[in-house]
Each structure stands twice: as C-alpha cells, then as structure tokens.
Image (cartoon, rainbow, N blue to C red; front, side, top):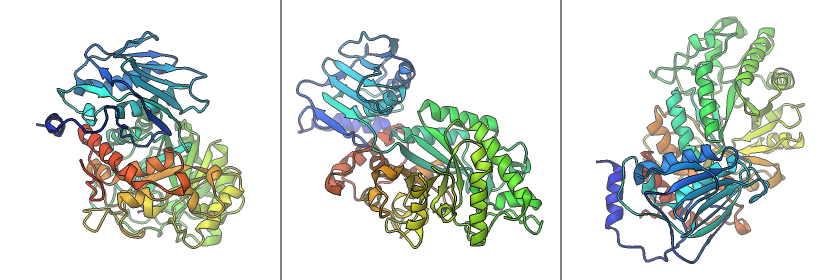
Length: 523
Ligand code: TNX
C-alpha cells in the first residue's frame, strides 16, 4: 500500500470543497498572471490525447504524458498536429505567441480543452510544469488511482523574473551517483529551476575525470566525509548528466573550487604543494585549510588542463571557479591567482566565469564575470564591496544568501542533520521572506542574474537527506527567482503557504521526501 494510494483514498473520502468550482490552482512558483474563468472544468478522459505542434513540441508532450499516465491509467497518446478536442491537451510552439521571452508561456483551460502555447520548446517545458500543477497532486502518483482528473478553467500568462534560477548540489563532500543527480534534476524541474550547479571538487573529493591528471580521480576521488565511500563521474557519466538535464531544459554549471578547497587535488599530486609533499586525504568537515601553491608554474598547467577539459565537456555557457574561503592563501597571492587564472586559462575556454563573491577582492576580472553572493541577507564585512566589483566590471550577481538560501541549514533545533553556522536555523518562512534587490546597496533588478539555492553535503549522505532538506524550502527560493517582484516590496506568506502545502502533497505522490514544516497550513 503506497503513500499515493492512501492519499488517493483520503481524497476520495473528503467532502467536495466549499470553494467555487474554479478556485485558484495552487502552483509553485506562482505564475505572473492567473485568472479563473467562468464555466466548467477541463476534464482528462481515457481517450484524451496530447497533441503537439512546432519544433520540439513533441518531446515536451512525451514528458508530460509520462508524468500523467501512471496515476490516471490513461494512454494519453501523443500525436502531432493542431487538431485537438475538448478533452485533449495541446502544446503548440507559436513563434510570435505569448512573448519574445524564451521561457514565457500561456495556458487556457476550459471545457473546450487545454492549450499550452510558447515561443520555444523551453517555454512549453516550463508551462508543462504548470499544467501538472493544475491537476490534483495525486496525478503524480506511482500507481493507478481511481478518481476524476479535472483542472480548473483558467487563463495563465507567465514568464520568469530572473534568467538564472539555480539549485546547487555538493557532490564532493558526499558523492551522488548519476541516478541520484538525475532524480534531483527531475525534482527541481517541477519548480522551473533552469540551472544545476555541481560542486565537483573540494577537500574531501575530486569527482570529475580529467585525462591529463588521472590521479585526481584515482586518488582524490576515492574518499568522502567520514567513512563514506567516494566516487567520480567519468566523461561519459558527465555527458549523461548534461544530456538528461538538457532534456529538462536545465543547464549544468560545473564548479572546480580554486585555489582553496583543494585538498583532494593536493593529495593526488605532490607537485601541486609548495613543499612537494602530498597531504593525507581529508575526511573531516572543516573549511579554509588547503590551497594550491600560487607561485609554482605547474599550478597553472594543472588549472589550464582541468578547465580546458571541463569546458570541452560542458555545453553550457558557464564555468564556476569557486574562490570562496581560501583562508590559508595569503591575500595578495589569492588576488594574483584569481587575476591570472580568470584572464588566462579560464578566459581561453571561452566560457563566462562565475566565482563566489570573494573573487571580487581581485582586480582586473574579465568583463562580465559573474559573482555568486553567499553572505547573509544583512551583508557581512566586505561582502558588499566584493559583490559590487562584479557589477562594476559589467557582470551580474547570483544571490545565494546563506542564512536564507542554503538548503543544508537546519530547519529548527530538532533537525536530524544539517549545519547551523549561517545565523542558525532557516525555516521555510525565512527562506521565503526576502528579496534579492534588498541585499547589497546599489545592486538592483537589472544587475541580478538570478537566485540559487545550494545544498552542501557535509552531513547529508543520500538523496533522502537531500530531498528532506531541499523541500519545501527550494519552493520558497524558486518562487523568489521566478515569480514577479512582490508588490510594494511585501512578500505574501499567507498566499504562499497553502501553495507550499500543495507542492508537498505533489512531492508525496511522487515519492519525494520533504520536511513537514510546522508553520505551513497542512490540509
Ligand atoms: C560554506 S559559502 C561553503 C561550503 C560549505 C558550506 C556549508 C561557500 C561558498 N562555501 O564550502 O560546504 O558553507 O554550509
């Protein structure tokens, strides 16, 4: 007896809702505009089809069909064309459709049918996540469920606030298999996340095959935190992740953290150390003790080889070079290293560089370098100036304020794992009640590329742990990143909270774990 079956049973016993027939659907992130229409609901039936037109529309139709087939038990055949009936869902790419924005989409649903339109396949895919959420959460169930499958009559016009809506996954402290990463990709796609930042290297592990430096994975890839076993992605594994992400319109952002957070590399190659002696592998959870040797030529050969190979396997536009917490690199050396690497080896890859905000201590960063902010909502000493360096250089900012957006922070004092260094616990409410335009003075909407919620895995050993920490807080972050800026700067928790519950109900049907946050109005 699965959770989905139980949920379905309960749904069957509940009295009909007192709310009107076309009550507002509960969607996370909230679309830019949703208007309830008069008239009856759209109904999916055993003969419903998913009708696709336009280049790439069919793939999105197949995706949607896969999501909806199991619980409904319907065939939901995908067919090409525009000839859709009253019980069909049609997906159409209409170049001059809803908006010029590639991720914008529109939905109309009524007794006449459900139509999803967008200018691109990407826009259709984002819209498909909304289509899923127009149906009862039980439609995500993993076994057939007996109930009527209807959606309210609505008109939706939607587009994202920010171009970059990220989730970060630390696969260095604990290793996560290709299957795990694919699962997380599916989890985050529901929330219209479009970038997955993989933290591929750190003191405890090196997780990506580099042909020119094979010991990085032979030695540096074997360990992890504590007694956990390590692992690494071969180039084929990485390609599989990149392709799977692309099928969900998610771009992989790979991070090689430099020059600190490098014990795994230093342990693999003695020559990368100033004293020529390889340190022991590291299995603890301290930060800030390791550094590449800034004055050795071999350091730059190493960095150049790694970045060249990584860029060659990464179709996306970004390479993340870390730069955080290099506490054991003398400040002048740090600046010299960052300046040299960003303008030389990294620049030669042709990718746009992202660095944690401390990288803004260096002068002469290439124009357009992107800063990722990890200080608090109230910036700590130095963080504002370092962040402004990127904007002054023509780059933008990704906001990941640690006290609200770090998903490895405990929810409350009873959380079984997680850390608390970023101002203690982070509730779902705290993760929701902030705005990226209110953090660094002088950095406004147009300077902000987007928002990312990293999940660090010092204390998280498997996907159950990761999902528990991510949900529903990633819903808070995704809404900040996607939905329109709050009116008068005031975020409406009371409007979000019931939608967060609906999200959790959907995750439950999907078999994805989450935290039963006490501040939410559970059904
Ligand atoms: C800070 S802030 C880190 C990570 C840790 C994380 C734990 C930043 C860019 N780095 O190295 O894993 O805290 O919460």
